[in-house]
Image (cartoon, rainbow, N blue to C red; front, side, top):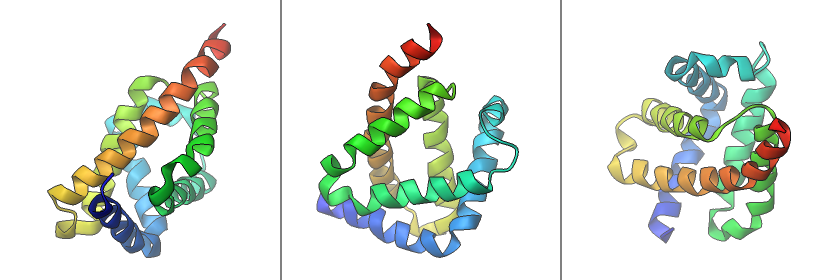
Amino acid sequence: MTKEEIDFVQSDWAKVVPIAETAATLFYDRLFELDPKLRSLFKSDLSEQKIKLMKMIGYAVNSLDNLSEIVPAVQALGKRHATYGVVSEHYETVGVALLSTLKKGLGPAFDEAHEAAWGKVYGILADTMRNAAEPARAVATS
């Protein structure tokens, strides 16, 4: 990632942090709108999950200058998600929900350059999670 892309993502995230609870609600509302079947992967009360989501995104965003630092945590997350029933296609839906949430929450400031930077970050994280999840998914389904 370029320094400019990292700056875009980190400055956007700084604007999201004060509205984290609202942003998390927007995210899950959009996710379940895109694929209602995903609702069954979560507990009925999403309060704890929303906090975990925002913490993990924050951790990743704050580590963009040294992505290798977070690879083990992201891989572990991918493995855990595989045991919950998350499959590769779900990552695409999550990416759409994330970008939609950022666009809605940040408004016109979330332009094409910012969207592309976030898409790149999400792509890196999702690929890392997916790759780590494959062996875990094979064990879970056997």
